Length: 215
Image (cartoon, rainbow, N blue to C red; front, top):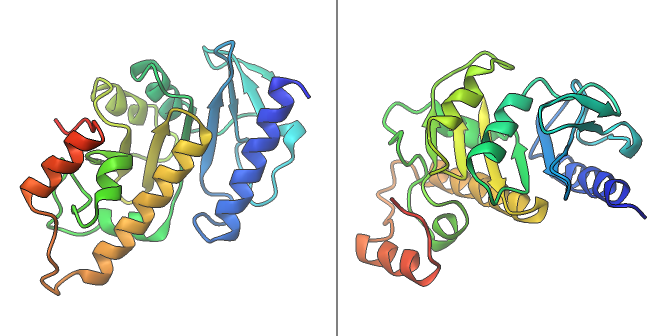
């Protein structure tokens, strides 16, 4: 099987897994994956991640020109911004997962680091998660906002919209996205309970042990 055929199958497999577990719904969410020649596979616009056809996955050039498959998601500028600013990015996942979206609606969260430091795993897999403002879906300004971070964040939360996570490959991006949603859910469950977060010293130990970019 060719690289592109295998990658198209992989995108469909992980997309269906996330859809079946309720991490995305309807025709929300999108995935991209970078191939060895620098071109991208992207889920098509208006498609459901639970019912993707590998042959119809969009194949686009580095500049975003359609090479084969259906028309790509309108959020492609958001994806390409991560590839352009983080050289080690091999895949990007964007969802509208419920708990992550809910976290963006709260009035007292830290926009520089939305996720509370409740467990080491959110730190290890995500680093600090930046809250970006609201943009109309498909607005290229989302990509410009990511570029403005100069590659310093692998994950962001779009206010009133949803999370976007970049990883070294598709598996890493999906695992990090799952961790983001799980941490958001935990934060909402514990809200108002006086739950004990990790101390600065404990955070420092995790950052040092796993070489996390925490600046």
